[in-house]
Structure formats: structure tokens, C-alpha cells
Figure 1 (tube, rainbow, N blue to C red):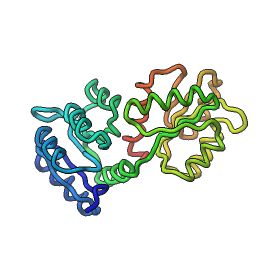
Figure 2: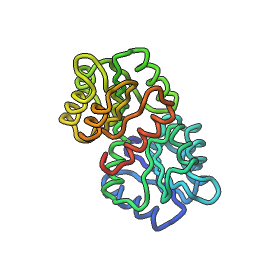
Figure 3: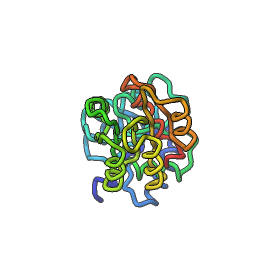
Figure 4: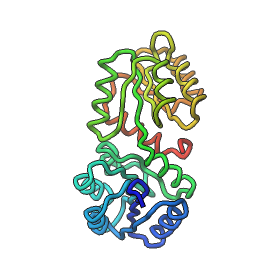
Length: 244
């Protein structure tokens, strides 16, 4: 089977591991299982995977430590973490280093399968800001964190790009000339209900921010913000069952 359908499931709980593997195999994926982080690294050295789904809490290497070692072996590898706990510091560190998303136990198989589909779709983060230097700086930070990202500088181009390419998260300035952030958001959501939109603003009126979130905008960050905060927001948006 082609590498793009090959998934590695890592969990020290055998029942959980085999259940996940069986459900993914029913969806047509080729699935390998690893009982812990060391076993997972052994498999990653032997063959290429498109996606790894790993528990965080495991004996020996935890999921984040395993993720870091995997990325040294296969830098392009996409990793989803599973946890029954809140986003503690360990998980946040993994996200800031390029973990695609975190799925919280217990979860439905439908949610897992949809997330796998999205993760393997090589979807990019689209950054929209009418100030090119700002947009490009954000994109550079996201790429440094291991995310695929690209920049456009107006709402019309954002909508056109979302039609042409697979985009799952859009980071959108709310105050722009011509088509503002709220109107751009509405058109993006009409295009695809699966696109999660994160607003950003340095001077939008509270009424505009409220209009954005009331219509379903995922969250809004105040400029200036740390790239780490944006990376965490993107991972949360991707992890949200409503996004899948």
C-alpha cells in the first residue's frame, strides 16, 4: 500500500491500540501498532509512515519525547497526540514544536477518522493580513514551528485560495480594506463549513470582534501576540470535534 495511507498507532494499552488499528483498517488504512515509544521509533526507522497517532502518557518515552525523536528520523512526519488530560505544559511544548493536533480521550471513532483524513490531506494554514510584512512574519513563525502555512493580503484572494487549495485553518485579520475580516469569514464558511477561522486584530472595535465570534469564529487574538499562542490556537481548532 502507498505510504500516504500508512499509519502508526502508539499506545501502551493493548485494547485501545488494537481498537484504533481495527477501525482505521476498516477505513482502508494500512496500520502498524507500537506498544511504547521505543517500539515506535524502531518501526519508524524501518519504514515510512504518513501519520503517527500516539498516546502521551506511556512508560519510558512519553508521547512528546517520542514525537521529537520521530521528527529527527522522518522530519516530514505528521503526528497526532492522544491524551485523557488537559493541555498540560508537556503537550503544549509538543504542539509548539509541530504536533498537528491533540485528540482528547474518550473520543468517537468518527472523530478520529475525520481527523486522520484532515491530517493526511496536507492542509495548510492560510494567513490573511493586508500588511504583507505582518503576514509573512506570521507565516515564517508557523513554518519554524513545523506547520505548513502561506500568506495572502486581502479577503478576495483568501477566498480564491481556499477554493483552489486544501485549507483547514485560516488566520484572518479583522480590519482590512475592501472585504473586511467578518465578511471574508462569512464567505469562507459558505465555501466550507470545515474551515476553522482564527481572528486577529490590533484595533478592531469590540462590536466587530463580537460579530466575528457570534458568527462562529473560533477565537480572536490581540496583536501583538506570540507565535506560540497562535500555534496553540491552531492545534486546538484542529483538535475540536466541531472542526472535524
